[in-house]
Length: 127
Ligand SMILES: [Zn+2]
Image 1 (spheres, rainbow, N blue to C red):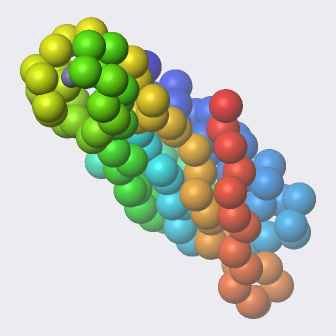
Image 2 (cartoon, helix red, strand yellow):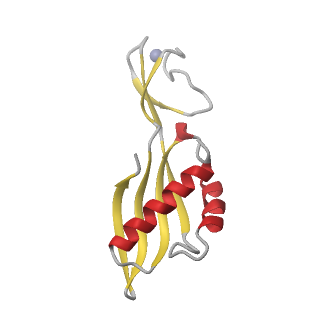
Image 3 (cartoon, rainbow, N blue to C red):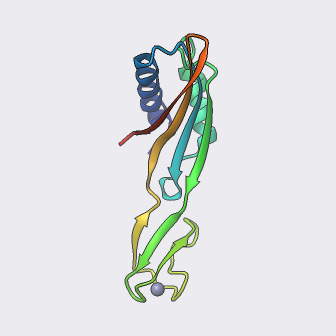
C-alpha cells in the first residue's frame, strides 16, 4: 500500500467525520497500525501536510501506535508475538505460521475543535 493513497482516503474520511460533528478544526488523528501493514506514519504526516492545505485538517498531527504481529504456529501449535523482520515461530523457528493479527489499520481516535470546545471521536474503522 502507498502512503499517498492511504492519506487521501484517511483525510477524506476524517474531514467527513469531523464535519458530521460540526467541528471546524482537526487537531490530532491517532492511528493504530499493524506492524505487518508496512505503513510509515512520518510519510502519512508529510502527505497530510500537503493534502490538507485549506481544509479543516490543515496542521493536524498524526500520532500512531503499532500493533504487534501475533501468530499461531502450525507445527508446534503455540501462539506468540513476532517482529516483521523475523517471520518465524519464536518457539520452534517454523515458517508455517498463521497470522492472527498485525495487518490492522484504523483510526483510534481523533481530536477536533467544535465551537471552541475540544471533542474526541473514537474507534472509527477504516476498512
Ligand atoms: Zn512453532
